[in-house]
Image 1 (cartoon, rainbow over the protein chains, first blue to last red):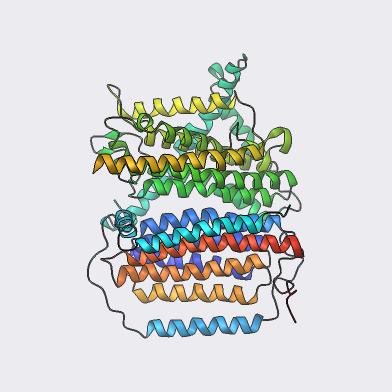
Image 2 (cartoon, helix red, strand yellow; image 1 turned 30 degrees about the horizontal axis):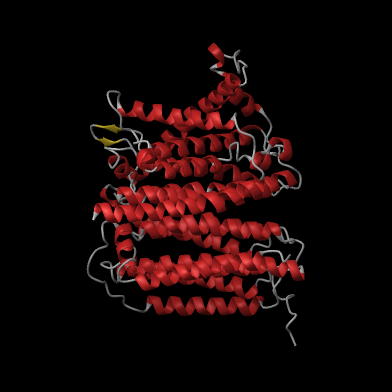
Length: 164
Length: 334
Length: 102
């Protein structure tokens, strides 16, 4: 077993265990905190895949910002830990079977396909290549995304603001 | 060198190197930054207030922090009755760990064999921003897990403050990275062979310093642990060694911020005559002194003033600075 | 070298976990957490395909970055909606927010 394989299976275990806590914990704060190891594990997967820049952004946005936002909203709304309230609706069995069915379907599809290997190697300095691409071939996407960001920034402020 | 190129060495060699480096960084930071930092803080505050500061343990009070640490080690670890024990205990690990992770990309000096850095990541500056943003999670966990209203208010204040000040800090980092043409900290230091970026980019330097003081929750931005309102903020309920670990995280983070400011704006290890490592330490402690000077000079902001300052002053100025610098880079370097 | 299929299997399982949270949780914030997990699963796929199928271009990583950006937007707006709902209806449980129900 190579180091890469050990790292991959270790990270996968971290992601899956903390993901299970996220979806199943009756304590909503525990769920939110368990997001952090899940996101950090996925960061590790990106590093294994040679995407350092995406990994950095993942930590900055997901682990550093979105988790904090989620914790913030949990603490600002009344529920608290949520232990006194029912956290699940009555769709438990249906939801579980749908999720398992989709997982089985995807896994079967993925493992029965022979994946071709593309030619070429990753660029040595990915941040540079990504920047060039964002201001070159993907300029329209880049500008569109920034517009969406601006709109959602203003929208979030307007929605969350108290009405005077 | 990219993160993924670790495969150049067998993985177990890499693993041992990582463990050795972690232990080295941890003990170095724990001893130098936190212990010496606390002593320095008390001495400087004493000097500014015409007192003597700690004086009795060891020559001139030099061993005071060691005595304090031994005292804290003997204290009982108290967990409040209705606290969330898991979160309460794990928050202690998150804060110092996130602070210590910052040190991976800081070049402390240069030797004949190359720069003295734990790993010259090609996303160094981004890595620094990412790891320092993790501290917030630990602080929120501590505030929530203590099941104490003062701790919770401290944690929530800290979250809003640190998330707000990350943006101007990021803008200052981007400005420097753009000038140097790289995110690697070693390349940024190399790019300052002529002028320091503090001279070329005084505005970005100022923004970075203000945001750094806010990120480490020190006066005038110490609402998080405002003693007169919140007892001690998010770590009110922590005792003994757990309290000491929070102190370690806080001082470790402050030293990391100062070291990053030295790397990005003050030319890192560069300087005439003296060896590079010494230059780095001199600049680092000069900045630490500035942080302490500010702490004992200014009163505390109110929370609304603090957030208004970030969103209405620092971020617009930082954005404007970024645009002007980008224009300048395009015109001059093309 | 870890085969591509392993990454895809991991992502499929994470996606299923997120889907389960979205379908069965009552708390609006927990549903948003499930959505974040699903988006992350998609990102693992994109970055893995980038490395294995087309390493020369960074198109997969670009896609992943755009997904991360949009996920941040989605989280901001979604959590703002949860706050607004809590303010006017005093609940964040989505099955109790049923004013529009026939």
